[in-house]
Amino acid sequence: MMNEELYIKSRIGNKNPFCVPDGYFDSLTAEVMQKLPEQQPQKKGLILRLRPWMYAAACTVAILFTATLYFLAPDSVNQPQVAAVAPATTDSYVEDMADYVMADNIDIYACLASEY
Amino acid sequence: MTDDRLLIEQLTNPKTQRRAFETMVRQYSEQLYWQIRRFVLSHEDANDVLQNALIKAWQGIGSFHGDSKLLTWLSRIAINESLDFLRRQKNIVTLSTDDEDLSVANTLMADDYFDGDETEAQLQEAIASLPEVQRTVFLLRYYDDMKYSDISKALGTSEGALKASYHIAVKKISEFFKSHD
Image (cartoon, rainbow over all chains, first blue to last red; front, side):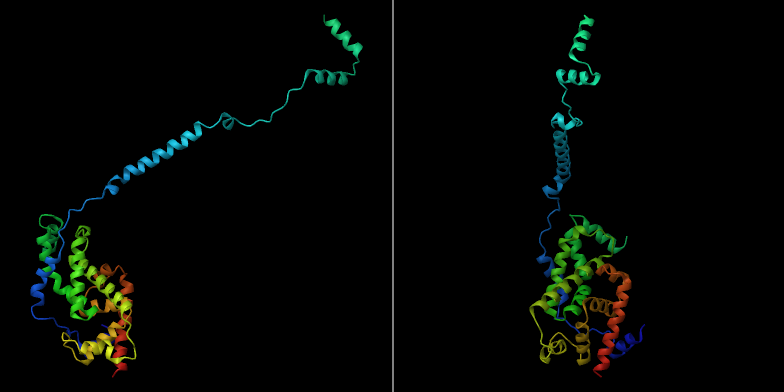
């Protein structure tokens, strides 16, 4: 025990300086029991009982919503984007080739005639 | 089976609950009263706080699972009710430090239900001036000789913190007496 504790005990000990009215404790139990409310059986509220089902429903809705968004999206959304190239016209193709081989009109006619 | 265990079993059975609670009140109410009285000092206040604490215990009986002693569980409720009462009282009444008539010691000396002398009244004043945790651990340890492990369960504070608080409280009270000698 600490010295200070011994000092306090030597000054006042631990006797009880408080007192109560006569018969207080004799009537206390009856007084308390009279004030007690009737105990209702404790049961979970409706919300608490339904909570697991609510969580399951929320998850199902979330999954369905996400799946719906994914599958109903337009095709272009799902196709890889490829750069579009405009097809060259026939006339410009022939002209480019004629320039390349340095052929004039007479050569081209001769070429075409020989095929037939 | 010990008395406590039998009582706990009866408290958890709806058919025997009320009768078991009455037995519990008869068994522990006096001890709880004195714990409360040392906090709140006046008999009228102690009576009110005790009855509120027991009603709370009744309402919370379903939450008691027998993992601590009945008295430890009841003490926890009683101590918390006492501390709540003191906090509310502090908010309502502001005592002037200059007005000696309203000091704790003088109020006790004028109380019909206080049998102590002036030294004991001054001790109560010294205890009442302690911070909450120091006051609580001092009262439970010095007067009830409660184990630190039980106080720890009642307050939800570590044993180490309680020992330190008790040590400081004892020092302050002994200094209070020495300064008033």
